[in-house]
Amino acid sequence: MGGKEKMIHVAEPDITKEDTLAVANVMNSNWISGTSPKVSEFEQKFAKYHNCKYGVATGSGSTALHLALVVLGVGKGDEVIIPDFTMVACANAVSYLGAKPVFVDANVDTWCMEDTLIEKAITKKTKAIMPVHIYGHPCNMKYLEDLKEDHDIKIVEDCAEAHGAEYNGRKVGSFGDCGVFSFYANKIITTGEGGLLITNDEALAEKAQWYKAHCFGRGGKHFWHDKIGFGYRMSGLQATLGISQLERIDHYVEQRRSRAKMYMNMLAGLAHVGKIKFPVQKRLVKNVYWMFSILVNPEKFGMTRDKLMIKLANDGIETRTMFYPMHIQPPYKTTEKFPVADFLCKNGLNLPSGNNLTQFQVNKICERILYYGTDIEDMQKKTEEHS
Ligand SMILES: *Cc1c(COP(=O)(O)O)cnc(C)c1O
Image (cartoon, helix red, strand yellow):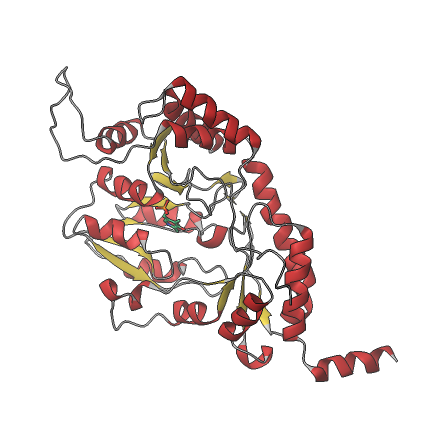
């Protein structure tokens, strides 16, 4: 099957002629470093898109997460509540500071942290909570805002996978003390590598700008450093690509949502009989389906997720397993139980979701999944119904 055709990848960036031209122009202008005016332009535009006052661009989402925790004062002995089911950058950002990541299991529908477990994880040492809008589904921000009011806790939203996602009509990233984004090549808009922190707190933004570039001189002394800062600047080239990509962010979000709808329409039969399970879109939220993912029920589907992956790969369709939860990763191994994260890890499958994914490709992917998931008895029943 399809050996000669091009592989359909899980995620591919969409770099247009306009993007290329913009970057070429800025190269000709020589404004390529992290002090390029293009960087502040991108920071301002990206923050404005989220109705936030300030933006601080960095070299990656991971560094932006670390920076956020630094400026919020997280340090040794503190605890930060993060999802067990997430990308490792969240846990690492906490660990860099000598603080302890406290893992919370996922909700079986949204795949984000389970609300009720968050409150249970709060202790006297809890300094911050890092809600992650997993695969583009926003967390319950009302619940988190209420928690913040009851406890003296900071909130850092990890929006790496949720560009343009909304909770109650408001974009994610604007709820927490700060929101952090990634522009890695597989994210909804990209700068190749890159990250950005947004906030409405002027002092926090200034502190982040200072720390991201080695806490360079105050009071006229350039090479004077009062604190240990970081080399976390974004380059002018990356920012220029970001500005150009930002022009199309709404288009990309709509693209993801419409492809998700297509997947769900075409695979509805399998979902209806419980062979697979779709991502949800809870009340009050706009899911941007960064990675359109399904859960495979091996008993009903007739094969495991891993077997389906291999079959699809042979058909020229690349898929990816969901995250391995933090509690089984060597640096973070614990004996605590996280049954939902384990379940997602075992049965979850990211289907191709890139910005350039065509309807034709979605058709092909669904046709193959339907083929593998439809057993002969089903087909016979259908034939009988029709005759
Ligand atoms: C991609 C991602 C990051 C890290 O971003 P980088 O830009 O790759 O450093 C952090 N958190 C989540 C949830 C991500 O998906």
